[in-house]
Length: 446
Image 1 (cartoon, rainbow, N blue to C red):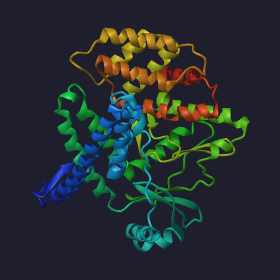
Image 2: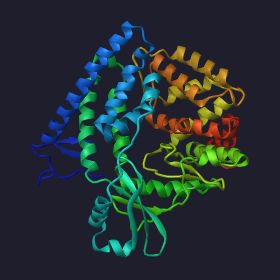
Image 3: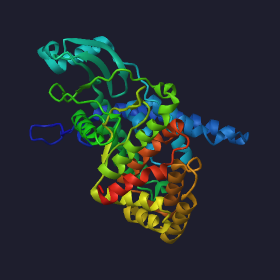
């Protein structure tokens, strides 16, 4: 996305402020900021009062009530805040575990685009060529999110296709709210409570992660790259992009029939172990071999077919790891699988984005090595990636290390699907399954 010109000379005029790569009208910003401030203030006062009452009564709800109210507030504030909260909820390296648990429950649940509105939007995008490109279109969305809806259609060659149609005005809505978030983050960074916390760094990456989901040209490129990469993993299906009719606000791709969010429960027992291994191998291949990682593998983007294939959708939130970081990431997991805790600790320190002035590296090395040793060789059912990563993040926070975002998001892509894989096969061994792919990632194909 490129900046929108605000004046003939290309410089912003007096009525706009710049947010990331877009400009936002000051009047709109002030109006929206006042509305957010009023709503947030009401939530803050009522939450503080209720929490105090619960605490006086020694109710166990007092600990979780503020986090639950924060989730409710973010859902009221709209799509940018919901997506930001969802992403922030994955940052277990910087955000307390209890708050992450609540943020992970944020629902991106919005009404589908009305058929007449979808018709008008497609007509505006394709003009007089719409009927020639898509002789048949079902304007009732088959899927819906805060950024886009998905329509089923038939193209000129008779193929059934899916059109991911961006919601109207979503750029303006998101950019306004991201500008407000940025301002709020700058104020928070000045508070003593957040001293030593990389608020601006986390906020920058959070806004970038939200903004990139609006860039359909980027998402189309990611979908093509993911499909090419996943050809190396048997039984993984990424829909084929139809490049010619794809536009900046509409992605056209192969339509995959039979997608069912409840399909996992219907899989034959004989298939479940194979599907679990396929899913884990696909993620390991992204992490350790390609360095190109789909970071949003929630159930709405990961489907299972009755024949044992897995389908991966919506590659907009993907991370490209530098070759250095990919190798460090791979080496960490390889050393962890061998029980070499001291080297794992050094890799975490080497890959960190920064340290607090009071960082205690000696204590971190000791406790990180102990964590690896305690988890090495555990029976498959006893080992938990989520528990391991959560404790590792807590050690980083305690001893003053800031994890590199370039590594945090890829790791969390693995944590997101651990529950799904465990449900498919409770006995799958995450460490043993990784070893062949780790070897390939570290030393190349043998």
